[in-house]
Image (cartoon, rainbow, N blue to C red; front, top):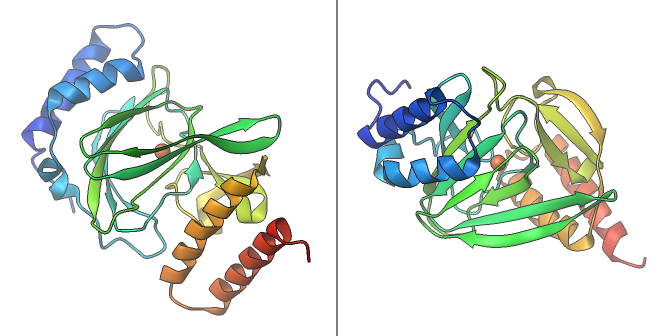
Length: 244
Ligand SMILES: [Fe+2]
């Protein structure tokens, strides 16, 4: 579905970003956060982009509001209990997320070949958080209601495809995939163009991840493949947490 007229607040946000870019100089996430505050976007304004009935394989609904080449404005739709993969943001040099519900936000540290939690927080409705390309994070809806989030991603250097080459951490396979697709679990092979080894997750990171991935598997159409993935995940969890 194409939204023909962008709601006024989103149009305002788009113009504020374009005029800041045209003023020259490098844009920072902090600046964009202030522009989002000024634009006063509401969840109602995002509703034309709602996609709660997205395919079950996707972790959330994902719609482009405006593609400005060097920046993108997107709207995401989150059903209860749904979480993104653990991911980073490709060529994004500055990014901002505004949530319209209570959202889980996990930020990870990848250091000395270990993946640990750097921060776990609940963003409350209306809150705005900054994201840069080095940020490895995961967002999700821990509540019983659905809601939307507003995302702005940009680059001072690249024109077009700025969220391309994002990386998803597939802890169940000890690897990180490179994709131009979403921050989804279990991406199909045609959405992945490279792999690299993954840092070793701490046990609390792995257990949390395994729970969210199992929830995702449970939502899928039952199949032999999903059953095998579930069993492999349980085996890995057992190996990591039990003596025998
Ligand atoms: Fe993200």
